[in-house]
Image 1 (cartoon, rainbow, N blue to C red):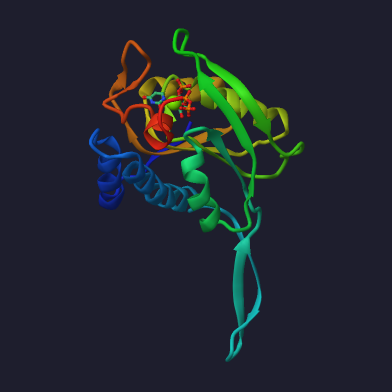
Image 2: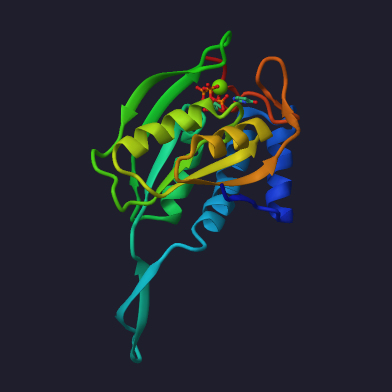
Length: 207
Ligand SMILES: O=P(O)(O)OC[C@H]1O[C@H](OP(=O)(O)OP(=O)(O)O)[C@H](O)[C@@H]1O
Ligand SMILES: O=c1cc[nH]c(=O)[nH]1
Ligand SMILES: [Mg+2]
C-alpha cells in the first residue's frame, strides 16, 4: 500500500497545535481545518484532469477540470472537522457520510450511520478521518465503499499508527494513505502514542 507522509514545515506546525493538550476545542478545530487543506491538496496531486477551451478576455486557451470529481466521506464524528475544508477545496465533490464509534472495551468500531451513493464505480473516494489507530474504523469504511464498486480509495488522516497502516495494507483493498505523521504505536487503550488524544472529543467534547 502506498503511504504518503506530508512532510512540510507548515503541516508540522499545525500538527503540533493539534497535539498540544493545552489547545482548546476551537484551536484544535481551526488547526484541523487548515491541516486538512494541505493533506487534501497533496492527496489530489496526481488527480487526472481534462482540458477544455476557456476564453479569457484576450484569447482562447486550454482550461483544466478534474476528469473524475471525487466523493468525500467524513467518518463521524471526528471526520466532520475535515469536510468543510475539503469540499471548499474541491467544490465539484459529492459528500457521503459514515458514522461509527469505537467500543471502549473491545476497541472495535460500532457503526451507526451509512449514507453513501449506491454506485461508486469509477469515482475516486477520499475518506476523511483524523485518526488511523487499529485501522478497524477505516477498514470497515472501505468495506462499505468497495461493496458499492469503489476501486480507488484514499484515506486522508492526520495521525496514523503503524498498526493501522499494517491493517490497511493487509486488508488488500485498493487504498492509499495520505497522513501528516506515522506515530510510535498504540497504548493499552488503543490510543495513538504520542498522538493527540481523542480527535472527536477534542473538537466537540466528550460523547
Ligand atoms: O483505527 P481505529 O482503532 O478504528 O480508531 C480510529 C477511530 O477512532 C476515532 O473515532 P471514535 O471511535 O473515537 O469516534 P468519534 O469520532 O465519535 O470520537 C477516530 O476518529 C477513528 O474513526
Ligand atoms: O488516539 C486515538 C485513537 C483512536 N481515536 C482517537 O480519536 N484517537
Ligand atoms: Mg472519539
